[in-house]
Length: 369
Image 1 (cartoon, rainbow, N blue to C red):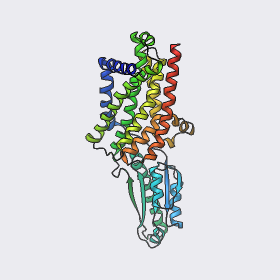
Image 2 (image 1 turned 90 degrees about the horizontal axis):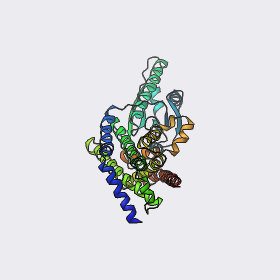
Image 3 (image 1 turned 135 degrees about the vertical axis):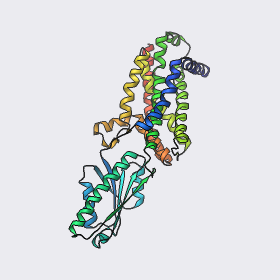
């Protein structure tokens, strides 16, 4: 059985490599997209979740918090007791911003001195962090002006200090590149696997494959491992370009990144084989891959945060492998994402992979019958 699987893997590699169109499709577009999208892509933001650490707990501090709560820019507020809880909430991506009010906030305002407020943002979501900081600056500035009028010209400035976790300089390119590494890995894997079985039908070699001594498992294994190997190589080449050419930081574990990438690509491979088993031509296979690729990208949280989507679409994102792979990519690149945090995203990816590969095998068997 192993010899037969290896023969199929070799056959898949040769078919892909000997076809000039396939070579161009898997090498040139991903590299071009990486360079073009990294500089040309922009995004907007709507709602922001906030963690609040109010050390002062005074009338003035509650008034400032109420300005945030009554703003249309912010949605959910989580009250915390210390800095560690702020870090935990931002690390788990439960909030995109934190507001820390010092214990002498009210005292300094009444004395006409400068009162400090710290705004902490999640630098992994660069656009969100920049927009959140600007919103906070506007709200705090308006509140400072109100205090000036109430105190009859006695100036009571509020000094806002902004700090961004994981991406202190808010390099927007870093967020774009991390997302592109994930998205381009999906595109490559999906295209290669979605055309594999359809190519056999179109070239007239499908019947030879059916009457060969290889079983369904062996055929699917051969169809899976070859595209997976090519996709893994290209994914790491893209990641290396992002790290060494664009100088993007890589702070996590290479081993965890490898494990999560293999699992994510397996889940996407299952989708590609499922589409390929249904398609009769390569054009149909590409169209089917496109039908999956576009909504999967939109629902992954790349264009807009998942928390801002309608509830119905938020539930759909739980079956989107890109949602979990994107969280892993940002966590491993921007911060040293821990083993258990990575596994909390790898396990759903493994479940999706088992389901999609099983569905592809079932469809393939049905077509053989």
